[in-house]
Image (cartoon, rainbow, N blue to C red; front, side):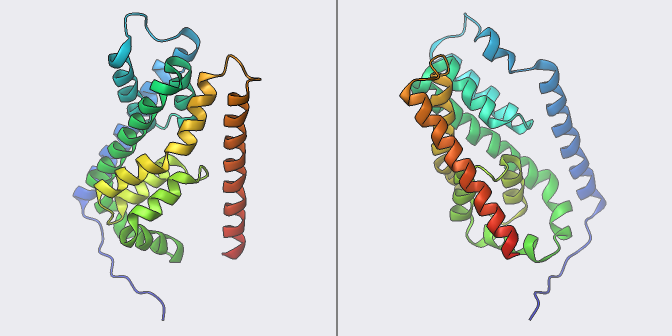
Length: 222
């Protein structure tokens, strides 16, 4: 028996909140293009910012940049290059969780009422049901596979009935392997022939290839 869903039409206020979300995200993306945070990789961290304060500030900036769709591999490499693996990994993970949490909250408050009634099709409904009923393990798997876009996972979860706490926990745990690999690669970028750098890059390549294979098999099954 086919699945039947009762969907109500979004109210005008819901569309207004969605429009606000689009404006906020567009403004964030535009500000990143103007500010060009990637310049930190070329010019280094400001000399007067050191220690824990620098790591905390970087994590906050990372979260805002991730919300503005800056590619996380670039941010992770930057964390390793600026702070090394020991401090760079906590900074990158904190920024990852912050960026994901901001996207989830904004999507839940501003976008959910307008977009959720528009869910159609078996694939979208199945994804929504999976996140709503098995949110933690589903999000954990999505974070472990680098082929799932960061922003897409965030906003998909925000539209579902998944709660914020398991979303953040799954993001933190699932992001460790690939984030760590990029941070370590960034910390050893000056010695690209070192065994540590080569192992990190090999891990990134293998997980990326695995994501491509899984995506291709999934498409063939559908």
